[in-house]
Amino acid sequence: MEKVRIFISYAHEDQSRVEGLYQCLVGAGFAPWLDREHIIPGMRWQSMIKKALKESDFVLVCLSASSINKRGFLQREIKQALEQAEEKLEHDVYLIPARLDDCEVPDALSDIQWVDLFENDGCQRLLKAIKYGLKQSGKTMPSPVSSSRRWWRLFIGVGGALMLVTLVGWLYIPPSGQRPLDEQTVASPSPKTEMVNPTPSATPITTELVASFEN
Image (cartoon, rainbow, N blue to C red):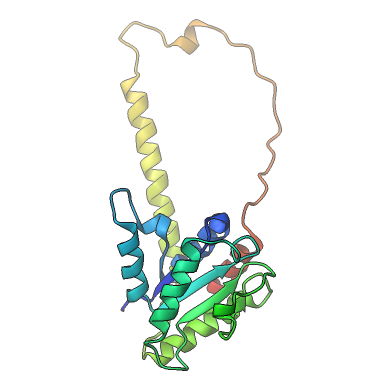
């Protein structure tokens, strides 16, 4: 099945929220494009961005109160995306403005219906727009990454860690006749400490996306 490519345009102030969006799109079976994930040192980043924009099925422009009035790469990418949109049919869904918070939409995008990802139904509306756009182009929605594949990746990661621990332990086996350090000294018992569950770091947008893609 051909990959559904989604270019994510954003300001670096919104990096943490956008990275959560990127991971959820990957888990849903899409092929999102994010500069921090696809541009490595030594690459010509301007040509890479232009190429990714041209090859994408959708352009998701992430907007926030901290980014809409900022000059720089976001504005340039919006301009390039609008130029690409000129080559599409009038009713094609291609460029999707996505508000991360209750911010104003730039004039250049004001005539395109946006989606509010911070609203309860924002993620469902985004998926609906993508599904509609794919139907226009004769493509189908991708299959989400199954839970079995997630567990397999976790299994591989845990197995690799155990192998590493075993290897380190083997390398540090003391010479014959020499007692390990913990047998030479008697350590006083350390006081018990209560484990505190970490506070979840997922943003509401990310949590809502996970729930939407799993339904």
